[in-house]
Image (cartoon, rainbow, N blue to C red):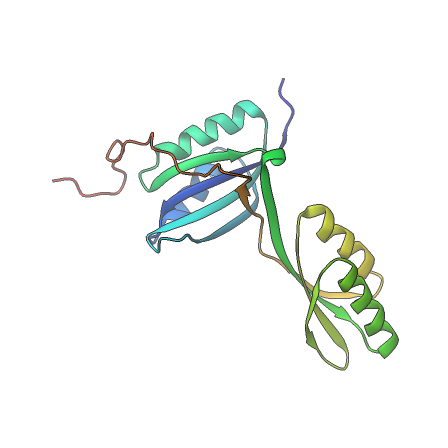
Length: 183
């Protein structure tokens, strides 16, 4: 039996209303919980890229990828191997920092991890950090002792390393006409 692990899927879709809902419904219908989801437009305003992280075994992820490819608004689907991709997320943390000594310590932690202080008040510091899970968890663990007031994560985004891209010329458009009026 295959081992269940975190897989990262990169999916190019039409940038139109309802596409994200259609993609996420596929996962919920199949009984999978999406661990991380990030969506944004690409270099073309007509195309969005969805980065999805899900816990599944190799067989299950192949089935999910094939099901995604069948959706009409999907242009391409690529499974990103951890060793061959760059994965990052943005984390914002508001930290309790009522004294100058605590503010100095929080700033030192931020500097060590190449984070940025993006807001300062008399009682708090807000830190911005970009990194993978290990980095963001390490910073979170170090700052918990000061009191994390709020924390928000964007979800993981990813690209393949080197010359490889998501572009895939194997999808036949018009193969599946879900929700489209056909005359």
